[in-house]
Length: 323
Image 1 (cartoon, helix red, strand yellow):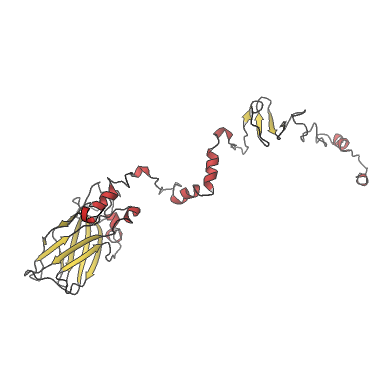
Image 2 (cartoon, rainbow, N blue to C red):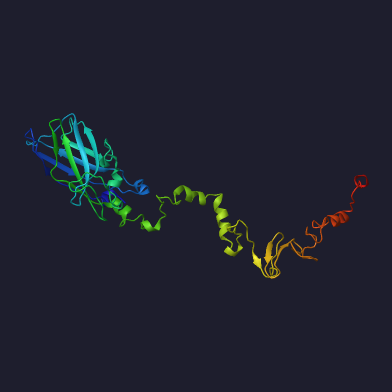
């Protein structure tokens, strides 16, 4: 996209009056080559400024060439309330300038702590911000930008003889770079609802947390968790106990060593050792055989005498010498 083909410009001649001198004509010509938007990646592709150019002539059509001329640029809402959204100043040496000057709004000096002193030029042009309050306005103190709202630019200058302000504001509207970025309040054709927005309250939706969940280490774990069905989860109850999967009988197929389940028909816990289904209770082969239960282990924890017999021990006999 070439500026020579697409760029729009606005030109005009405005008149203002000096209070203490006979210089009465202020001719101002402005060319607008960029309109700021608040989206950073679009800003990186477009010129970061708004160019103002003009010529100051006296009543005899002679150029003003003062060595130090201060300019103040203000951007106001054009909704009738005239709320001040942005302000900056420039100082130019206009000696030998033939009265001509050129300013890039966005590169001037900022001072103060009011809204217009700290707000960015991009945000001053943004129609998606919602209600802005505590503003200096001609009417009221708030501004709620609407889609398609334009802005007014108010220019004043002082060559040492007093501040002179244009009585007519310049109307700033979208030009080609803004059409590329805006597309009816959109980012490359997508609306705000197409993007994840961080939560500014107490919720945990933030850029940091999102990047943590989808980090190289955590994302594979998330995929693994989502790959199983809820009935495969091991849940902890309110009393602290954990539940294991319940199956009537044994799984039909696909058993793997180490798998464990609760047989809700036999009321026993079972596991697969890689060869045979074993039980953690009951008796008999495949049903607790070889497990440490009171009916078949070497010690028979429920009866001390039986435990000694099973272990080949008797009270008062030293068995160490025969081991």
